[in-house]
Length: 218
Ligand code: PRP
Image (tube, rainbow, N blue to C red; front, side, top):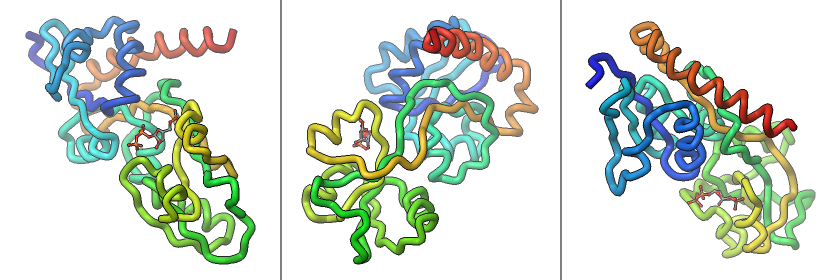
């Protein structure tokens, strides 16, 4: 087993599903991640990497506290949690959009103070501040689309990737806020301590990312 190893916190779920094929294409052993069942932490037998599977906001906490050296996480989470970690790469996957959405009868120009449901209160606040509109924001943990459907909120600010969830719940997009993609971030101290291993990992991945972006551009 390699003596020095780096700890990589990977966001569970959608990011994980899109990043594992990238890691594999870069020659990184993901066998254990593929067969993980309910396990959350994985040491490669042959490579100097330990993978930690965590929720996006916790990936930033692991990094901030030095419990992980590298984080792989969406820019939505980095922006919302005002993460000051050093961003080394845009992986070009997990591409989605922040949108303002609601039911067909929503009137974004109506003068009354609106209630907005979201998992991202900071990003939402900033958006409405820039528009000079005062709103009430309700923090919702998931299935945000329920808010305008149940009368909990007038509209939502959320991310959309394929648009399926909005479509299937008969919600309409009223505005586009900002794009989102998966980023590779690093703890600055770890970068000093494990410079060689971190750059080896990043370089392996960078080659695959640049190849896949060239293929997409064809
Ligand atoms: C996100 C987002 C939307 C959905 C959009 O939720 O909050 O609900 O994905 O994706 P789509 O445009 O491809 O349909 P996520 O699946 O992360 O889970 P959550 O609802 O529990 O937050």
